[in-house]
Every structure is written in C-alpha cells, then in structure tokens.
Image (cartoon, rainbow, N blue to C red; front, side, top):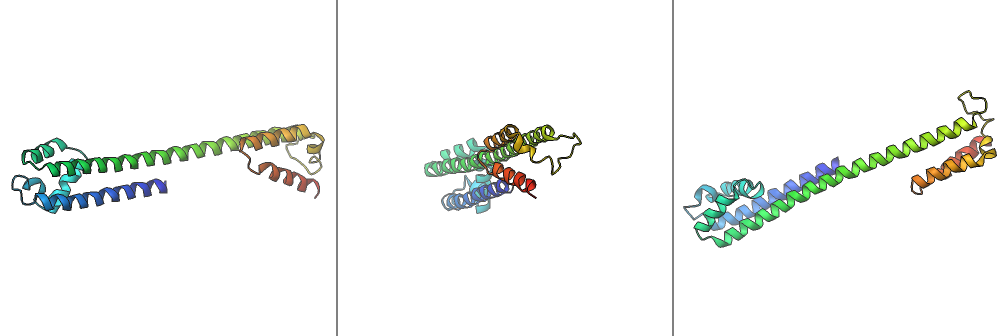
Length: 182
C-alpha cells in the first residue's frame, strides 16, 4: 500500500511540475494577447487553464479554438503536447496502482493456499500416525514417521512442490529428526 501511495504522490508531483513548466511557457507567449487574457493573462490563470483544460481535459476544445482563432499555432502544439504528457502520466499512475493491488492480492492468495495445504497435509499425516488416537503426538509416536515413510515423503513432496523449491522439507526433516533423537 505504501508503494502505491508513493507512486501516486510522485505522479501527482510530476503533473504539478508539468503544469508549472508549461504555465511559464504559455504565460511568456500569451500574456500580451488581450483576447486570451481571461485564460492566459497571469501565470496563475495559465496554470489553472492547463490544470482544467489540459490535465483534467474538462474543456479542451474551447481553449484550442480560442488559440486557433488568434493564430497561435505554436501554442496549440504546446498545449496538445501538455495534454498528451499529463494524460500519459496519469494513465501510468493508474496502471502502476492497479499492478500493485493485483500483486498484493496474488501474494495474499498464494500465502493462504500454501498455509491451507501445509495445514491440511500435516493434519492428515499426524492423524495417520497417532496410534493411541488421543489427539497428541508424543515422543514415542515420532519414530512411526520413519516406519511409514510413504506418508512422510508424500507430505514432503507435496509441500516441496507447491512452495516452489523452498527449504521447507529440510526444515520438516530436521524437526522430525531432532524430536526423535531427544
């Protein structure tokens, strides 16, 4: 979740920097034009116009038509470049957040499935080896693991295969051996 918040924050910072940079450029070229003073008269108005009409694309058409009517073709190109860059940045931010959420859900599902597999397999193995059916696995019943190796190696094989090669079988074997020889 932290990574997603960091990605969103950095993307919004990048959009703010783009608005400021393009605001300075548009103000330099359009502040002297009286017809466009309501949209580009000051730096704050330039940035506001870029935010609403460029980054949020609320009314891009009237702004472009006003620039075209004043024959500011270079500024039309600059505004279109800004719209492209800001929309691309916001789209990448959303894709990054979506990928982060999908990755977190996948990891949680894999952990849950692994936990359930190990829990179920160990429980079945212990119930098969519980001679007195008391629900406790005593020190005396531990050598039965080596008498019935098919159950033990079936358990180890399933856990080892499912976990993708982690050292869980080695840990299980060392625990069993340490309990047997204590």
